[in-house]
Image (cartoon, rainbow, N blue to C red):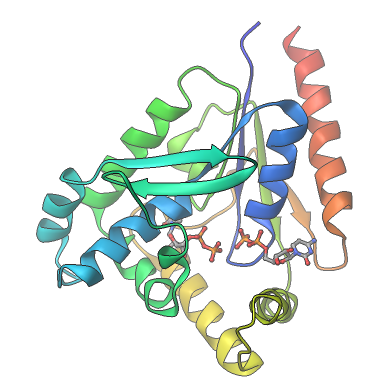
Amino acid sequence: MKNMNIAIDGPAGAGKSTVAKMVADQLSYVYIDTGAMYRAVTYEALKQNVDVNDGLNLIHLLHQLKIDLMNQEGKQIIQVNGVNITEEIRSKAVTNQVSYVAKHLEIREEMVKRQQELAEGGGTVMDGRDIGTAVLPFAELKIFLTASVDERAKRRHEELLSKGHPSDLNILKNEIRKRDQIDSEREVAPLKKATDAIEIDSTKMTIPEVVEIILSLARERKDMMK
Ligand code: CDP
Ligand code: CDP
C-alpha cells in the first residue's frame, strides 16, 4: 500500500513546522518545509540584489538554484547549490520580504512543480500555505492549523528569546499580521482552508495535543485506505 501525503496549512506561527516534523517522525515519513524553499529564493534575491517585486528576474534566479531539504541527525537542513543556509533564511530581512517573492505566479508554478515531485511517492508531511489547495489537492489528509494572532506572536517572541534574540511583542504582532494579509490576499494560491481540510485551532493547545489529533486522523485515514 502506498503511504499517504499529509498537507498542513495555516498562518505564520500556528505551529505547522513543529507539529509537522513530529508527525513525520512518528510515522517515519519525510517532512517537507515549503516555506523554507520560498525563504531560500528570497535570501538569494536579497544577496544578489534582485528586486523582490521583479517576477521575471526572480524566476531567472530560481532556475539557477538547486534547493535541497535534508534531515541531518534529526535536524532540518536546507542547502542551495550545495551551501548550507539553514540559519540565514530565518533572518528578519528574509522573513519580512518573503511574502513579496511568494506572490509571483512564475515563482509559485516552479515551486509547486518541485514540491509535487518531492511528494510523488507518498509518505510526506508537507507544510505551507497552499499545500491542500494547490500543491497536493489529492492529499489523503489535510489540516488547517490556526491560532489567535496574539498567541502566535507570543510563541514567536518566546522562540526568539530562547535563541537569545529579544524582540518587541507589538512589532512582531504587526509583522505577522502584515505577512498573513499579503499571503491571504494575493491573487495566486492565497492562504485559505481547503474545503476538505480539518481545522484545528491550537490557541489553547499544547504541541503534543495537536500532534496526537493529527496522528489519530492519520490512523483513521490509513484504515480507510486499506
Ligand atoms: O514559519 P513561518 O510561518 O514564519 O513561515 P514559512 O512557512 O517559513 O513561510 C514563509 C513565507 O513563505 C510565507 O509567509 C509565505 O509568504 C510563503 N509561503 C507560501 O507562499 N507558500 C507556501 N507553501 C509556503 C510558504
Ligand atoms: O511553522 P509555523 O510558523 O506555523 O509555526 P512553528 O514555527 O512551528 O511554531 C512557532 C512556535 O510556537 C514554536 O516555538 C513552537 O514551539 C511554538 N508552539 C507552541 O508553543 N504551542 C503549540 N501548540 C505549537 C507551537
